[in-house]
Length: 398
Image 1 (tube, rainbow, N blue to C red):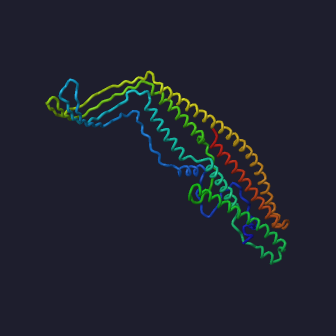
Image 2 (cartoon, rainbow, N blue to C red):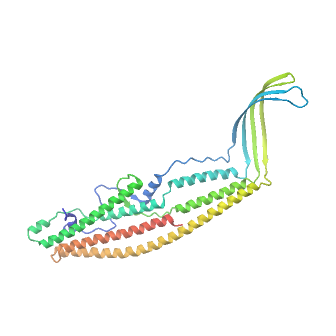
Image 3 (cartoon, rainbow, N blue to C red):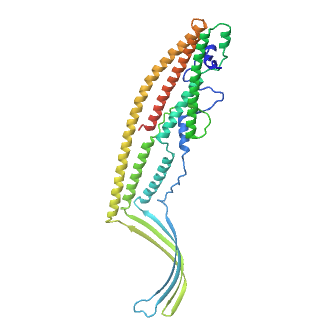
């Protein structure tokens, strides 16, 4: 039935729905917001990152074992000294004060792990824009396809055979019907193409019913978040290098057992013995020019990271200002298109009444219905462009 879809609005006496009506399909698809699909895309790229343990408040425990066999000749002693010994000790080192060196090292390790995790799950600008375009395209296609009511019976041949319409009128109907059918096929193609692009990005997620939702909470822009992490990491590195120049106090202790056998001046002795000891070690750097150079390099790296962050902040501000101007322009365009759609809808209703009264041809009513569908789709496209600009503003705004 070539005319079935085209004549549905006219012969059924229905009215075109609003361009913001949700799609109506046989099976209710699952509604998805853009943030849900973006989170799914980010989660699909997550990888296992080893957790970084904290070590600043934990002692260092070592198990040490020594085996010794020596033969020495001392000066002014005729007989050499033979010694064979073996020891086993458990040593513990506990930092009482290290100037924050180990705490800074722990923080750097955790910051590196967080940066790797964020880099692995980050969505690039290219993938973000691809997901944004496919999501908006699918919304427009589904909304346009949903405006067609259920097809009604094609009565062209019946009316032509009964003499109620002429061949010219039937040909005009056929031409209008083919144009509307071609537009519907284009919309179905747009829908299939958008679903294919989403499936390429996300995998098989089933049928998606997109919802243009903009949450009020704004996540930090990825570029600025990465730049801020680099600045924080550089600050921790400066703190670590400065801690090396502070006093270091370490409490060390060991305990164990040993056995030895010795021969000296013809006398041999052997036996087992215990080993233990406690020591407090104080280290106070006085003239360590290497540490000064390390601190200077760390401060230089911090200055470079801060400069990169400021540059990213300025770039984000420019992008946000551009998107803001685009949103304002789209709002004005939407207002004009909404008024144009309302005029076309009232004209279509008038044409349907006049065609029913015989004052206008059915071809004119079909043309008016097609104009309503065209303007409704343009209005949807404008609303999607405004929504896309809002999403880009959320991503790049400082």
